[in-house]
Length: 321
Ligand code: SF4
Ligand code: MG
Image (cartoon, rainbow, N blue to C red):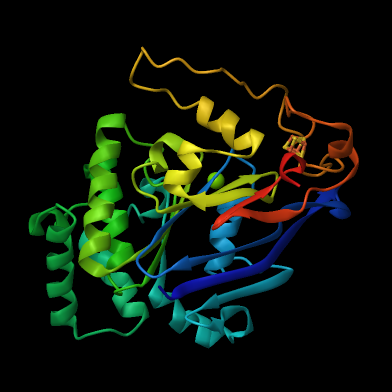
């Protein structure tokens, strides 16, 4: 398979400002030198606790914010070198689905207008063709033509996420970055939306970056998973391998937090002790060492290397070096 997206050494820092003059007093390394690639038609999940840098990574991939370093190759072209205009055009191929569709849908526009907007922005089709496409897309995501005349507040959370997904698909994108697309929904609705995303992926050969704090949610949708902690990628593997044989103590702890349906299955319970350290003042050595049950002396001093320990299975942890 050919990679649609290749991310190399991506870095993003946010300044910490203080006082009435907004003096810069430090910085937060939100994304710290992460690399991965995503094949065409694949679902790559980025998982970690809130504040780990996964949403920032998602925004960097679409250049909604600018990184301080690294490369983002989309179809072998580094989009970080694109002019504003070239980037604007490229965005029709890369779209985003947000956690809270309500916040991302203009409450004063009808659904028809909301869905038509990306076509207008990218100058696609005549007015008649655009309307036609809106109606088709409404049906594709499980809504009806009549829904086009309504406003976002007239829909349930699940329906609103269908509208958010429809909007993302209007320009026939190749890549969709979905940031916690089901986190705000009831569990029963979550599986409907996950199934819809899977169907659409087949139908339109979509590639997904699926961002979630919940390893349970991404289990059945992802082909590969990257686990992030305090702006670092700590483990990456095929989904099956990651769930069957997690290597990093943080991944193990996250998996432990996922409820299992079978009460007869006994597990060794590892909980993540302590609070998440401030990203403005990350721990020395291994960033996870302040919470790791297997922490060794070396972990406090030396940063573990990012290593491929089995084919396609990467981890940054001194237990494997
Ligand atoms: Fe734990 Fe050390 Fe591995 Fe970090 S490097 S996860 S502290 S064992
Ligand atoms: Mg987030």
